[in-house]
Structure formats: structure tokens, C-alpha cells
Length: 585
Image (cartoon, rainbow, N blue to C red; front, side, top):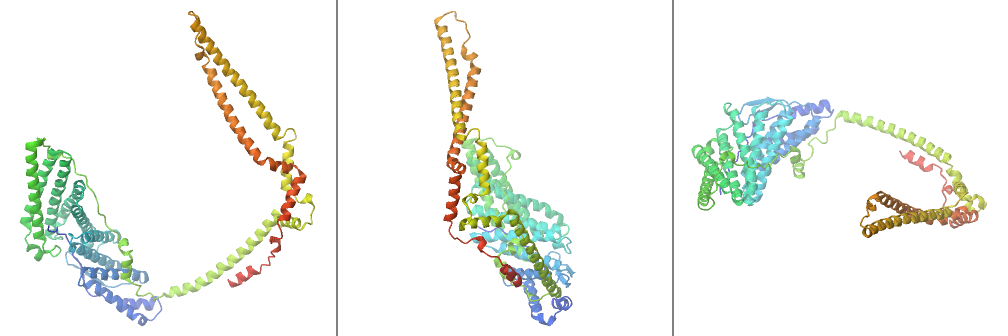
């Protein structure tokens, strides 16, 4: 099958530029160094531009040369932001010469060249090969990303090809062609007809919008007339494809009437595309007048539109025959057919993403003027050293203040006295009465005061008795209610004239209250069990705490078992290490 032709962005052209003279002047004035020391760097930059703008044997080589030059321009702008060089560039569409001294103009022109190169790489791919298809999809999107960067960062366009409207149209063309490539991918991979129809519908919508946009430029004679014709053919061709694949989906869903009408619409659009191709393109016309289209554009378009028209006609005849003989479905009006959903599958790839890849960074290489250090940097280095010394002195002073503060805090907390007491206990030079910490003695006194009237065990036993009494009372009440209800119903059976209202209704409130009290009692019992469990866990400890002899024995045993481990009090702090560190600083 022939490959659908795509549009390539034309390239700008330029003349020689003198980088050496202005760079030598700035090195002498702003850097205080001899320009002769950087003669080789100036020559390298000059050659870098020449290689980038003269073109190369292949578009891939041209791409790498442009990548390198633009990367060096970015680095150069950081060092020589005020540089003024005369940059002459001819418009890609009008060939009008524009000359500016702004580095931004040079950068915008180089980005435009990169976008044009990417579009050429995409157009040259063999899309019958999956890898070629993938590369075409990628480079159409990167071309759109480069052009988008121009529109977002260079506000005042000095030439037609860099103007916002023209660049926006070129972006839309690249994105439309990326969608067309993705449609071909879905078709070749035999994706579902529903998905193919959505992608084709989106592509057709983009080409249709481009046909409307390009009309605004027809009077200005900016774009090649064959571009306008190609966009119109593709708008009709993709519209036909979207209707054709949606018809296949409708047929599978037994919507035979909708499918037949869509095939009629597809056939009509295919006829228009083929007719426009036949009247506008010949195998020789494009080669001589439109170098931005492939040399076989006319032949490929004729083959594509003719084959698709034949396919639509055959499918429409088949659907018509099946509907007449089998389905007899009512044919809806074309205007009442549901719109085909669109799937946007391609967006511009930002320039930052392209330049962020390791391969591109490797292509750019190191900064040509990496050895060049501004005079202001030398001065700033001296200032930096003094400022660093000030900061170090200030931090040392803060450290001294912090040392004094933490020593004062330890003194106020009595840490030194506490460690001394512990050391005395270990060495056995204190009595047993002094071995118990003051805080523990406070806990002992507090518990004794609390248990003066009744201890915990007695309170728990009293609580159990009260709980048992409440349980018995509630059981008696429940039993009385059951007996009363049973007697009432027994009398109702025994005496025919028994008129008393059933007691179950009258005692409903009592039963609900009883149930609530039982639930509350159960919850209280659970809480009591938890409290008892907690008490069992600490009862032995509390007993030791309340017994002076056992309490002192515990602390004596702990002190004697500690042994002669290294004590914090044995670690004499002379401060020598701190001062040694400060001397190093």
C-alpha cells in the first residue's frame, strides 16, 4: 500500500556570521583576560555555526549539528548576555532577508531549523515498518514542541515564518500528521474498528480545521497552494475513513441502517477526495513545484484515494444488498446519525524533554568557554572567603553560648547531684534509708494516704458485693414480669369473660428499662474486670512499695548488681577536644 504523503516545514537560510570579533572584545573588557588565550574556542564556535546552518548529508546528521549549536548558544548566553552579533536570516516562506543583532533571534531561527529538520526526518520514515512508524510519530510531535517553544518565548517576531499565526498553523499541521501516523499504527496493528474510527475522526477534524485556518493566508501567498490542496484531500479522506470504520462497528452491533448510511457518507467523501486528487496532482507536478512534499506525493495520493473509494463502493453495495434481502432496516437521515467520538492521541513534546535526554547532552558536549572565569568571579571569591570566616566565627560563638546554657540546665535539674548519689550507693558509702529516691518515697506516701480508710482489695470486694446485689435484684424483677405475664394469659384462657389488657403491652417499658440496666451492668462488669486485671499486674509492685524493708532491699540489690561499670562522673570533660576542633576550623 502506498504511504500517505506528509508536509515538511521549509528551512530558513542564512549567511556567514562573525562570532570572533565581538567575543574577543567582551573577553578583554568583562573578563580581564587576553583574547588570544581563547582563539581556538572562538574558531570552534564559528565552525559549529557553519556546520549547523550549511546542512549535512543526512537529516539525522543535520539534527545533531543543530542540537550542538543551539546548546552552545544557551551556554554562550549565560557568559555573554550583552553580546551583539549581526545575524542575517531569510524567511522560510517569503525568502525576505531579516537582520538583527539579538541573540534571541538567532536562537529562534535555529529552533525553527530544528523543527524543520524533525519534520523532514518524520516524512522520510518508511511507515510500513513499525520502527519507522514510531520514529515518524515521535518527530512530528517534537517538531510541534519546538515550534510551540518559539511561540511561548519569542513574542516579537521579526519575520513571517516566526510570527505567531504562522507558527501556530505549522504546529497544527505537525499534530494532525502525528494523528494520521497513529491512525496508520492502529490500522496496521488491527485494533478495534471503534478505536480506529475515533482516531480517524480526530485526525479528520484537525485537517478540516486546518483547511479553514489556511484560507486566511491564501491572499498573502505565504503557503504553497499544494499544501492547501493536500490538507483538503486529507480532510475528506480521513472523514471517509472514520465513517467507514464506524460503519463496521455499527454492523457488528446490528445497527444495519446506520451502517449503510455511514457507508454512503464514506463513499461520498472518498469520491470527493479522489476527484480533488485527480484534478490537482500528477506524478510530476509535486516534484517540480513543491519540494516540501515527497516526490511520489501525487502517485501515492491517487493510489490511496482510488483504493479506498473502491473499498467503500464494494462495502456499500454489499451492505445495500444485505439490507434489501435480509435486514430491511430503516435508513436514518445523515444528520441524525450519532457523532463519532474523537480520540486525541498526540501532543507536542516540549523542547526540555528533547534536550534532557543523555544522547542530546552528549551531542552538545562541554561548554566551549568553560575555562573563562569573569573578573567579577575572582573578586567575589575573595569576598566569599571573608564571609565564610565570619560565619565560622559566629558559629563558634554560638557553640560556646550553647555549652554554657546546657551546663546551666543540667545544674538546675540536679543531674550532677543525682549521679553523685548513685555513685555513692554503688560504692556503699550511704545508708539503706538514703538509697530510695525521693520521688519513689513520694509515691509511697501518696499510696498510703489513699488507702488510709480502705485499701484496694477491700474496695474490689465491696464492689463485687454491690454488683451481686444488683444482679439479684434485676433477676427478681425479670422473673416477676414473666410470672405476671404468664398468669394473665393463663386467666385469659381459663375465664371467657377475662377483659384485662395483655400485660406484655403494659410492661413493655419496664422490660426495655430492665434490658438497658442489664446491659449497663454487663458493661460495668467488663470495666471491673479490666480494673482488676490492671490491679493484678501491679499488686506485687505496690506491696513492695508499701513495705520499707523490701523497698530498700530492692534498691540495694540493684546498686550492688550494677558492678563497676564506667560512670559518667568518671569521664572528665577537659574541653580539649572541642578546642582542638575549633583550632582546625
